[in-house]
Structure formats: C-alpha cells, structure tokens
Length: 268
Image 1: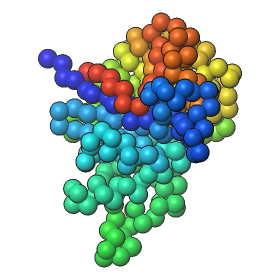
Image 2 (image 1 turned 45 degrees about the vertical axis):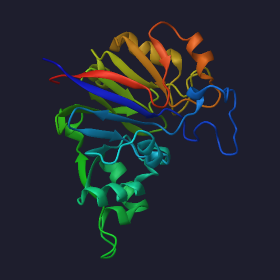
Image 3 (image 1 turned 135 degrees about the horizontal axis):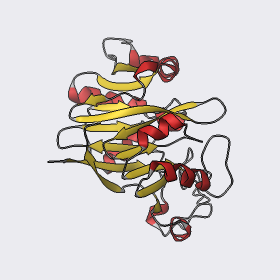
Image 4 (image 1 turned 120 degrees about the vertical axis):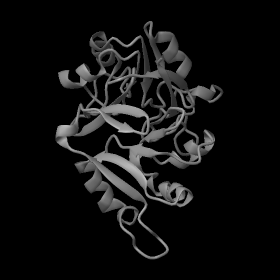
C-alpha cells in the first residue's frame, strides 16, 4: 500500500516577494489573493514527519500561517538570503523541542551560514545555546537516497547561473527545483518519473536569464522529466496569477502560497 505525502507551497515569490515594500504590486492584481507571494519555500509532511525546505525572511510567518509549531528538519537549497534569512526563527523551534534542529545542507552553504549566523551554530552564552545540528551533503552523497523520519529524498545539484549551484530535491513522486537556470542530464535523471514538479520560472517571459529559468527552458526540461503537472515558482511581480494561468500550456500552472500538492512516498 502506498503512503501519502502532503506538500505545501509556503512561498512562491521571488527575492523581494509580492507586493514589494511600499505596496508595489507591479503587474499583479491586488484583488487576487494568489498574487500575494512570500519568499520561496515548501513543507513536506507524512503522518509522522515534517520537513521544510529553506528558511527565507518569511519563514516564521509562513509556519504561523500554516499553524506549524515544530519541524523535524530543514533542508537548504543554497545560501542566498531569500532562502536563509529567517534562520534565526529556528531558535523558537529549538526551545520548543528542547534540542537542536537538524539542518541538511552542502559545504558551501554551511560555511556561508556559519560566517553570517555564527551564534546559530555555536553557543555564545549560557542563555543562547547552539540552535542547529548540522548534517552535510558530501559531494559523493548527491543523487543518493537520504531519509528523515519516514520520508526518503534525493538531493541533486542544479545550475543557478554565474557559477552558482543550488540543490533540488526529489521526494517520492514529487520534485522541487527552485533557483535553477538549467538542469544537466544527471539532475534530469533523478527527476524522471515524478508526477508533479515545482520548477523555478522567475524569468517566465523575459527570456533565459542569468540566474533563473524561463518557460521554454522548463518546457524543454519537462519533455525529458515527464511530470504530469508542473507548478511554476519564484514568481516576480511582473506576472499576474490569472494572466499566467490563462497563457500556460496544458499541465502547467503558476504556484501560489498555500497550495497543497498530494504526492506518494516511493521506494527511491
């Protein structure tokens, strides 16, 4: 008997969110709730395990919105601020569970976060204990199976442009690829067979950018991956939800904050 996963899109906006500071909605209709976008993150849940991917600036608000009080682990895609700047809120979770919060990340992201948020990694006083328990993804562990609780997943490297590398993740028949410009054959091979793929499309209609994918790139990649449903994420204020939805090909939809996706736990 297959077991289910619940995927929640915590945030699907770009690095500035929608609206931007001062109420700038760009081309997005403020009357459409699905245009309100916080910074990119997802939550993956089984009956017994909760995993969050990335702790952006809106992390605390996202968990509060979804009525989530604790998590079992955090996975990090990379060290850009829109994916990590809410890490301080892990102090609340650490105090609530009375132990360090497991985080999983690659060496470069670990080094960057230790430099920027040293107090999260090392105890600075009797009042401020270390907050996180670090699990490093070694180079050789990429594209290999990992497990947290009863959730198996596979991390893989993605081209984030200009020499940047981010991590994507496969959970059962669900794939997550935020902050990618392109995927190589190794990454595509990991994603082949997923039923649902959430993919970066920050440069939706602006041509293939330097850090993010555009729609033709996502379509080309999915022709190999074969996902039945593709949700576009990392969306800028230039793209109104309803106008995007009307223009997308069959099987493609914009993501939105709070979107719930049902997936299946598979033996990966």
